[in-house]
Image 1 (tube, helix red, strand yellow):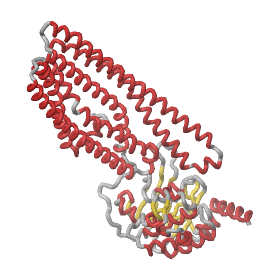
Image 2: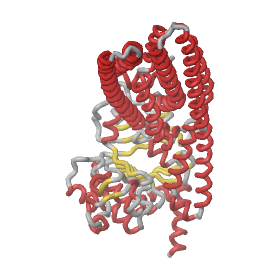
Image 3: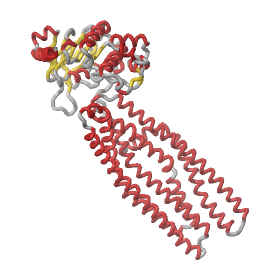
Image 4: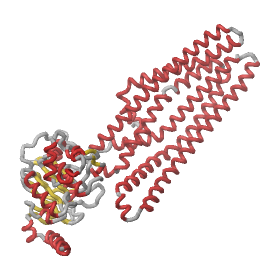
Length: 581
């Protein structure tokens, strides 16, 4: 089986096969020109300088300039095509990773974590991309230079070939020892980069909590520890890499001294010419430099291999929410949604979070879900848009299991307002048009009016063109929730899901919004998860959850008579309201 690095390069380099051939041809041309230069130089010394033939020197000097120019042109073109291919490789790899992550359910996202996924799509891809780039620039020409240099050196003086062999063996030993120690260190390095990203992301996301609890020194220490751990690994890697260069230079200089020593004796004995000695030294330098460059490349391989393994782990990840092989592309019914003995268990959990869930939601009907914290309300909601798939039972839309429905069709029918309202960087208008790019400004203002958001948007300097920062951090929590509700209304879906979407609203705004929503959603399925009884008391049916199971289904009045759990929730809230009165 191929290594992750081999599979990744094979997968993303394949479309650029002709570019690889062009780079190799150009590198071959540059190498041949470079190998010819020492021979021409030797000819000038032996047949021009030593004989005093100025015409010979000029003629062969012109040949040297022509070969040098040809080498430069080939090298420049090789770097151009190699760079273009490497950048295309990085673009394709990042695109494939992003597309794969888009297909992840919440289970896969939670498995890797957002910081690690970001690192894999940026730093990890960059490391493999750098290996591809350096391979095109250096590695493609190094073997040709080494083989050609050995042949030319043997032609010049076969008696000193043992020096080349000894130098190459020494360089190989040094490379193997250092590279074998660097592989595990690079694996640690990437994990610690993940840790730094995670700590920094948590600090920035939770900055209000950090300041509220005066935990800045603790967070600073936490980041310093993660930063220090990364520094220790990087220092160790840096020391190993820096050890490489003095050893290589020592071997190069030692080899040059050996050639000069034994070459001088051969010149004295008349078996070697001065120009040939110069050429041999040049060929030796070319051979050893190509070996050194290849060694540097080999030093990049362990880190690139670790990064490729992390990337391929994401690309090869099996999805827990799998599209149907033959998906249903049209639904005959009116949008009835049903839970049929549904259970869900998180990966590795001993017990299911919810079980035995059976109820039906009809168009034009509002279904409310209520229960204590941890009762499974959000888990139940996440099954509707297939953020997770039920581990037992089935969720059906118009009598069809949603696992058999085309995912795009299913998502097109759902308007989700999540528990934590999230807005994207852009403007108010771009956020509202997220579910319906063709919506007109009138559609946006109508949705804002229903969501009780017209007043504060009108007060913004640029109104619909007002900039919204990432996550909507430049608007209040209540404004964020109302904009998220307006976004769902602009989509005009047949199923509305409000996952505790009214918690940041005051009671009066909540009442006005629910009254306005009634006219907009009269023909749609409406599913509301709420903590306040006042928000859901007028729902057509209320589903009461307790410890993952249904303990009551009915209207507000029915549940007050028959459901003790609902009675407790109502009594606790009434007590709280009376205390505040």
